[in-house]
Amino acid sequence: MHISFIKPSMGDLRSSDAMTPLAFGYLSAMTPPDVERVLYDERLEEIPLDEPTDLVAMTVETYTARRAYQLADAFRARGVPVVMGGYHPTFVPDEAARHADALVLGDAEGVWPRVVEDARRRRLAPRYGQAAPPPLAGITPDRSIFQGKGYAPVRLVQYGRGCKWACDFCSIHAFYGRNLRQRPVREVVEEIEALDGKLVFLVDDNIFADEARAEELFEALVPLGIRWTCQTSIDVAWKPGMVDLMRRSGCISVLIGFETLDPANLKQMRKAWNAKAQGYEGAIERLKDAGLMIYGTFVHGYDRDTPDSFERNLEFAVRNKFFLANFNPLTPTPATSLYERLRREGRLIRDPWWLDPSYRYGHATFHPRGMTATELEEGCYRARTRFNTLSSIARRAFDRRTNLSSLYNLGVFLAVNLISRTEIHRKQDAPLGARPPSTQPGRTPVPAEGLP
Ligand code: B12
Ligand code: SF4
Image (cartoon, rainbow, N blue to C red; front, side):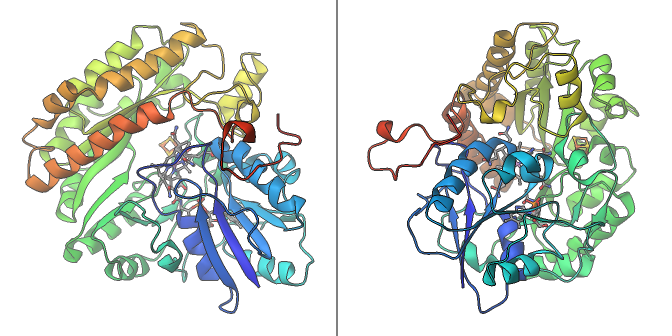
């Protein structure tokens, strides 16, 4: 039996910074050894639509759904069964089921071996899921499928799933609810020790989701001598000694969702806790004293935002010499309470935007209250562009506590900022899904039936 793992791109986009799709590392590790498996990642290569295979397994996110459905339709047109999993099919199974023979809802652990056996017997069930989330012990990703593809030289490792907070726009909360799980620290340490590279990205959406378990992990990382980066909620900075421990264990940077400087917006997104304790400035000082570079993300379009909000957030990010920053238009993804609220209020512009052929990356998907939809998309793009000018990069580099604290940090700062500078322009305004075949000489035509 032969399985093709497929990671669709958002559209006709190749990426210069694609990272290993960890979901397939897990699926490959759980696949019986007699099954041949190959990975195709459309961010890096063409998908060979006519290659003989017995099963296509796709991971689907909301931004890649349109493209995933096009590819799936092409495989199914020649009789190859397609199974989909990941965030988007879990959120909108009825939509995904129109383009797949089987769906895996939620985590694959505890389910995937059964899917493979059913596919082998040509008896795939339409849906697979489980009543309770499976424990995360005992499985280490198989990274052999990533070899030779040209992925970014950072090693993705997952410690836990879920988050203790419940921000209204967040897919993680929609996917896991209140459920929090971590892998045994010993297994994570063994996995990291076996990696060839020494820059690790701990991909948990909030590494500080469980404070005690986070501390246990950081302690265990100290002797490994690695460098690592992560995403965390800001309260990590409030806990005495925590950011110093992170630094000692090799952490070089943290991504934090600041989202907005407006307390009423924070309240509306159910993130009022973000600005508690010493507020943003106090947290930033603590992080900087510990030497951690800060990647701040901001979201625009909540009810108190006006055209001035972009400038305020931009000024804040540059003044605090953030390592990186992102200025996103608020984008309602399915199954979030934000999406339900905007739909109820009749404010969605394209519903569902992720299937709309006229949607472009970076564009507004709903009517904000304090500005027009056009002001929202232009304001975000302008803030991104200005944050990434060469003079902004030079100005932000000069932070002796963080970005300039070592040659290593400076090297990472410059490399990642220069990549980010090109990526923002490459992605902006890109359509989701492939353009009609006639506009793409040399590409394998993809049937667009059901997807205009
Ligand atoms: C690291 C990361 C990135 C990296 C790239 C990762 C990569 N490998 O290329 C970067 C930073 C570049 C990135 C970019 C983006 N990301 Co991102 N990213 C993540 C993050 C933090 C971790 C991904 C990961 O490795 N997970 C670990 C694996 C093991 O978990 P998993 O993918 O959920 O897989 C499990 C199950 O879902 C299931 N499963 C998944 N796929 C499949 C397929 C099959 C066949 C089966 C059976 C099962 C199955 O089985 C797996 C094991 O249980 C996730 C959040 C998260 N914690 O997952 C966000 C996340 C996936 N990203 C998200 C988004 C929105 C984006 C962007 C679109 C952001 C933007 N505005 O530009 C971009 C573009 C993405 C793209 N497709 O091109 C959202 C997706 C939301 C949604 N509704 O789809 C997430 C959930 C973050 C969030 N908080 O909302 N991302
Ligand atoms: S803190 Fe981050 S991961 Fe947690 S619910 Fe909020 S946005 Fe999602």
